[in-house]
Length: 251
Length: 251
Image (cartoon, rainbow over all chains, first blue to last red):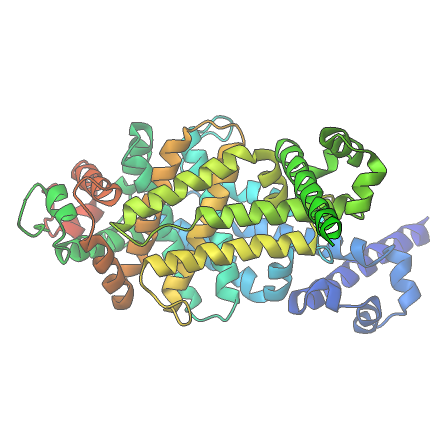
């Protein structure tokens, strides 16, 4: 009986080890560039033994994506304490840690393609997007069951913006990631503000959120800089907006 | 000779007709829900004759995606005249016309999945993204060969935001499309402004663009509304930003 239990534990441990090895290889190169032979060699076992645990590369890839998806979803979990800007910044730091660690694998999975995509892996990606979306709603103190349609759009499209920003960053890393982490937090405020400018319900949510922001937070800093930038804009548009025709905006 | 020419023309015409029929069917339902029998029936020809022109559903699907990709890329072509806000708004109107006409096909293609994705179709989608990106750069009077890294990021991520906004809109159509067309134009200004707040080169591009904006354009209207919204915000953040500690922002 004891032996049986030990034997089952051994199987799980071996699977966990293989998944870890596979995830590391799939993180450095796209899945079609990684062979089962290579995974076997990295794990220090024979090729047939790999097949004993996983029927093929696809199932091992899916197990690796599963582990990565759980890790990524966990990066969006953040205590609901303190100003929202600081919370989102910590989430973005962990998101870029993940992207940094799993660059090529992340790109391959997100960009799809026949050698990579499987409906299982795609479903896991959607699951992470949904988890991120629900986390953000929770931080906004909005019930996940029936959010306002405009808020749902902003949060989902911001999650997608974080993805595309990370993918563009990975392609050359020409902008420091710290800058993009802050930028995405500010993008969230900006996208919310654009919607809030035309919708009273969104305006209420935005004003509630910024009411808790400290003067040295990412939203306040952005606001101050935009006011300064607006003062340099002498266009008809900004004169009209400020109600001062022919003059600069007084900030 | 004349007969030979007519026969070749006939082949091309038949192919065009089949592509048109297929595109219409793929627009209403996802590709795995459409059979070759159905395409043959809709075109008024036999199933073997469809196979005479296209080796299988995949190649017909790719030809349909090719036509749709050309149509979508064309929707981003806009004369370089007048204020940028109005140009982008016309582009977004055509983009939503396309999304509206090809809803389920657009969703299926963008969301990928094994029944749909082919590397050829994915490459065509990337081609359209690239065409849209190059069009926007041209409207900003920035050479496509060496744009600033931050501008490239903003434009590419905005193209991706337009995609995700359209996909979310298609899922229930709970927000009027006209609102989202304007919102995406303003999102472009907002994302650019967030970057411009921290980068002198981006600030120069933003100020150059808004200098040509009329007082009744989408950017000016947004700016005026945000100023009004800011006046309602009594947080420490906005007081600090406006340099008026303890008081409301004077707009």
